[in-house]
Image 1 (cartoon, rainbow, N blue to C red):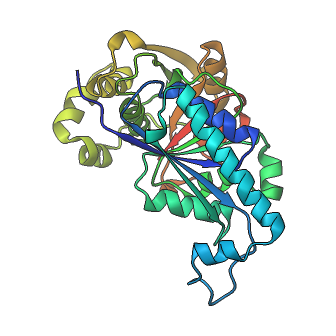
Image 2: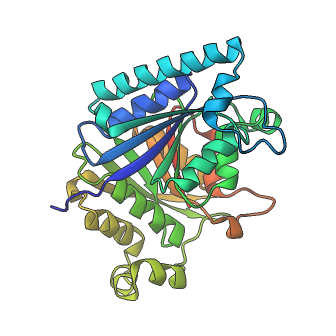
Length: 314
């Protein structure tokens, strides 16, 4: 049995029910697992810093807060206290949780993304407000900003109260798909409750079933790739082997070929509902390979998904 490595999660919170949904999800996912640390980050909206005042310390900014902003800061502290208690009730001890409250400097979304980039986190957790694509275009959102601008770390977006212990992993033989499998295996190390359902779809307009050999060799080595990707059943065998290499029990993994479809995003979500999967872990293209006029599959899954968590792994 492999000893699980510590996983480090940044959870962006804002005191809303959507944040509590995300924390509930996190607590269920990591119940009674010690190799996990959680940083809670609450960025309070505030007037942007004047040009030339970037040097002003956080303590000095707090001293100059208006009475209304002081009240909001106090509410944020109470939320953090309740968040730690909630995680504790689900088996994540206070010693595993760190709380940060700060006033926005660049903007709420920009500050959170900056913190995620600076902290070497294994994932950024967000609670989604449930707005659709049109509302996000008009008003913007943290989840929208993060998914559009962040490809260097996985983003977990939680919509509603969802089952954190059953996962759908769409698979093919591409670098993106295998990267998602690797991330899923790493996160679920030592988790005795998790179940993983591998789904393969044959599509006409989207999807990538050809191995990206240079990228695959660079990350997992030529020997591993030739052994596990050179088989007729590699579309299921390779991602399953990645999970097994991470210590996931084979009796927690199942798979199915979902047949043919025009585009895969709706069948992926439909299959998640049919299999009662609360999380869809999906690989996505890098920013340099992002589609132009048409969004990638991961973006389209995110647009239609409700009452489910989406892990975007780039």
